[in-house]
Image (cartoon, rainbow, N blue to C red; front, side):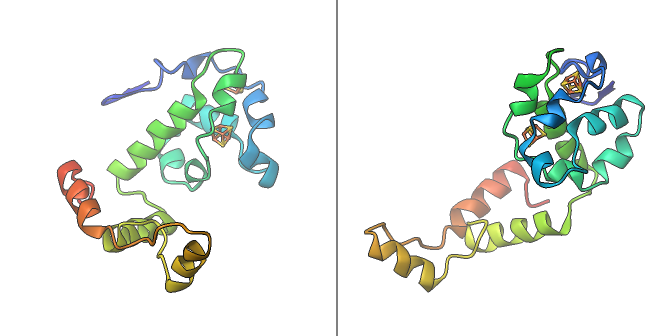
Length: 148
Ligand code: SF4
Ligand code: SF4
């Protein structure tokens, strides 16, 4: 299955035989049993790409690569999920949490707001104070068209 530069076949999608070894080793699956990477691959293989990129599951993956390492068929599961995320972004399917993180990143240069309390804690263990990094991040967003 090819979709622009997203070549799922190159990543071995069609070689998946749904043994579930990827899902049984997945740390996210341990916390949330309904998250199953092999199910994502199944949906992609039967052509339900829109349901994958329009859903929330692809955003739950921590990209730890355990699934790719465990797969007996050499399917690059993590890369496939990564491609699906990129397709989702390109087609405007961003979950609210990710949108919020993007806005915080643009505004402060960080994914999470650094408060005085955070900096006080850092000071106590002699770590440098964190400051606003928004101008640098804005520049990177502009160069990569990430703000579009
Ligand atoms: S471990 Fe590999 S073959 Fe088995 S379900 Fe996962 S991706 Fe498919
Ligand atoms: S890369 Fe994602 S899907 Fe694969 S094992 Fe890690 S969290 Fe699970």
